[in-house]
Amino acid sequence: MDKLDRFLDRADRLLERLERILPRVSAHSAPDWSAAHAFRWERGALQPVAHYHHIGLADLLGIDSQKQLIEQNTRQFVQGRPANNVLLTGSRGTGKSSLVKALLNEYATDGLRVIELGKQQLAELPQIIALVAGRPERFILYCDDLSFNAEEPGYQALKAALDGSLVAFSDNLLIYATSNRRHLMPESMQDNAGTKYVGDEIHPAESVEEKISLSERFGLWLSFYPFSQDEYLAIVEHWLAHFGLAGEPGGDARQAALQWSIQRGSRSGRVAWQFARDWAGRQ
Picture 1 (cartoon, rainbow, N blue to C red):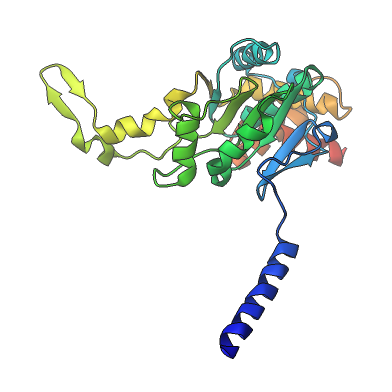
Picture 2 (tube, rainbow, N blue to C red):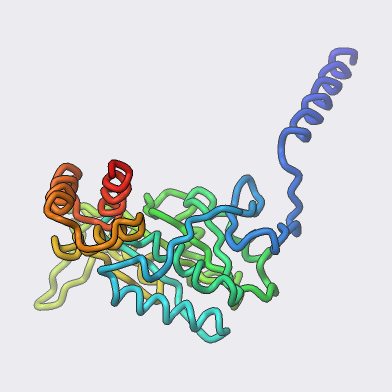
């Protein structure tokens, strides 16, 4: 009996230490919504993000059609009209994440808020839905660089939340996700092994259907492509002006910008921004 008492006493002390370390989060606890326009889901709670990237829609060049579509969808959303969840896919560094940040800067005064969470936290979606339900603000749930394996818990949670779960989304919540994969999951030739041909009709294997079913639950797809040389140089010019070097890049800057993109194997908005920072710093 003495051994059992000592064991229980040690267990109580251990639990007390854990309670002091771990955050005390109630299922109904909410953050100070006035503290910020952006929040991050961390350790079961919404944490305000006081300083986020203040990029504007006008700073994003070479993606006019994508910008028009997502801005229209977001405008409908903040005005309380029907709008779609959005999947932004394509080449790296072409403005997918920056576009979501720019939308927050554009529509924050209209009540738009952004909640960022990683794919490992998607299993906690019901908690977030409960927190924002009934709020007057309009929330975008932002998932950056999203990709899955089928066995990951976040995959099934997101799939059910988008379309199929008994727990309905609030009218004031949408999901905007970015990914380099259009179908959010790795695909292989083996996926087609079960494909059957009957006459002229093709019946895809169920594994293929499973891999495209998640992306199909986003109502709006936006695809992003590598920039041409002229588009890349126009973005370089824009950011050089941002750093106080107005005017078209001279011969030296133009040549250096092209060499910079070759070294990085990409002509993207991100590469143009990085070059402009380096060039402006050198000047």
